[in-house]
Image 1 (cartoon, rainbow, N blue to C red):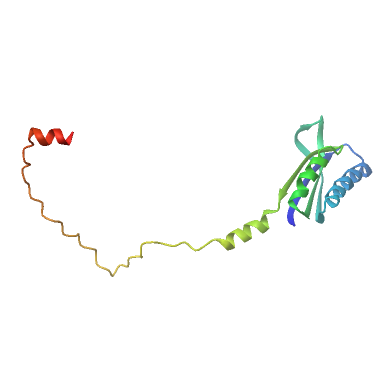
Image 2 (image 1 turned 90 degrees about the vertical axis):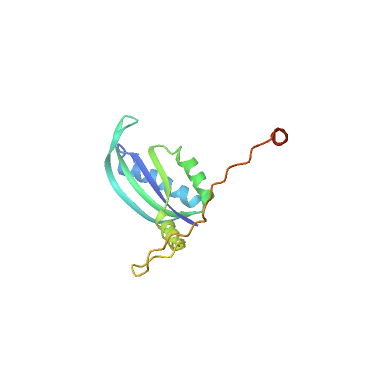
Length: 147
């Protein structure tokens, strides 16, 4: 089971009982598809960044839960049609993933050994002496054979 977080924005014009009924439907969807709620954080009524369905405020609730990966698609599919849920977002709880990912990182390896200040600088390699030779003239027979 993976850990997820669901952010829900509910219509801000609802009464407390109606808001709780909508949130109970959302909780029911999570448990219906095999999830278990671990924590819930109610942020209360907040102003939207922009109007949604001609409403300027909404109730924000964040629900942390555990569920299988196949349940997420079903929860999103069903929450889409819940009345008075204006926005929702389900994200994977990445705290667990980043810790595991950092533990699996191998130590960096360096191909070249580190040089210390005590080592003398490497001397340039000797190069073979190049002599200039004049090329032999090419005859017509070898030129045709080369082509």
